[in-house]
Length: 379
Image (cartoon, rainbow, N blue to C red; front, side, top):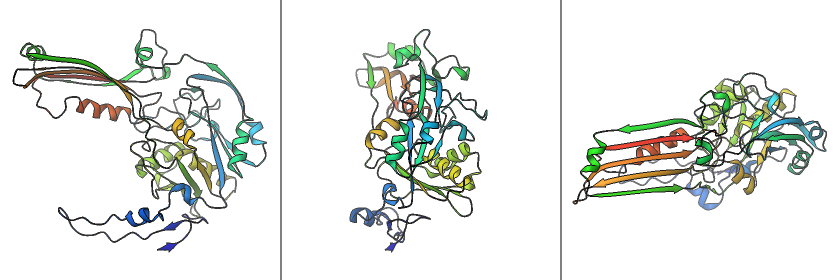
């Protein structure tokens, strides 16, 4: 066992040395490298590893499901007690991110440097980020948020499938030129669907609704960022793919990927809920901009459970219509399905999840005459 600090900074972290991997294959059960630390309670999660000298950051949500920003003055927050810096859209080199398409601003704001085609003056989700307040304490950062002077113009809310795909529906991303809230689809056709249903002696047809699902992992989002002596921007956080986090941070900060280091200690649960961005980019931006100002201190963030539920993304809701036919022996003669997947305001993994849904609609069966169609839409 080694006693030490969180990487690069003072702290009270305790790390267990990882066991040497055990050789073996089928029929062997090598011990989990992280098992002893977790069952003994000595494993350290991101919130456990925050140094005593860390500044605290608080991200201000827009709290607007769909609205245009008309006025924003961060000055009162900057002048609040204990505040070290306030960051917004003007501070992001490339104010955009997204896992498979860049369609979300890092910050909603009125200042845009032109390095992204995504308009940043519209909030499309109540947890879009408006500003990041960095202060000596979390309480001071939260108090400063209340001082921001802001004015919104409400826009029509696109709440569900009917609102998103109906005639004359307001466009969530009008700037992309698609002209619809349905932005990607998949289609599979094989054999003769009509002949398959004619041969069926039993036809079953139904529509299924699946709701959003909250992952509710054990530890809400937390992390620490700093800049190493060699200029590397470091982020320690919990996630599901460090290389994707690093790539998105590098894109938003307009830095080479080798200038970014992302480290995961014990994760604290994920279940898909940590695939998308939460604190990664804004933590990195905070450390990067503070270092430019000569402030050599780590920056810490930790969401409450409420902030976590509002601020991270959910398992998709969707609607699935299915019609299956079989003969008297139970042999499937035809299978037809249409499914709609709700991406919310931004794509993230939606097109990939749509692919999984599309492949899963037929189940593990031999289908001589399948017909499937899956659009994904924004709301």
